[in-house]
Length: 131
Image (cartoon, rainbow, N blue to C red; front, side, top):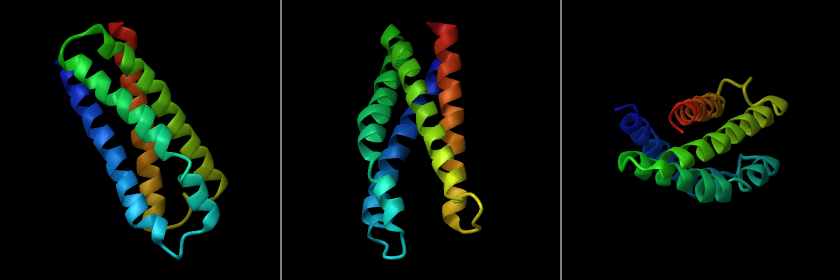
């Protein structure tokens, strides 16, 4: 039961990552008010986010739903990638004072960091107790 719930969360997170990058390239990347340094930083993340995290989450979810051992393995791999994503975003946003503004970007940044770290923790705990 827990594996099925986690698998659903993994799929939701993977789809959310892909959706974020679609939004970024269609909207945020074209916003003339965005600073070039911020855009350069963000443009370095689609490959690891989609090519590593989203793929690992989807493979993990399939494995968990099929009750296969590779599901737990990829859940652990995804947890490390999620922790890295959450911590690098936290560090970048903190250093660049992106948490201190009161606009929607600050709230979105806080949400992304929190969800990545919480999802990373859930995946790690599941992996530890089920490997």
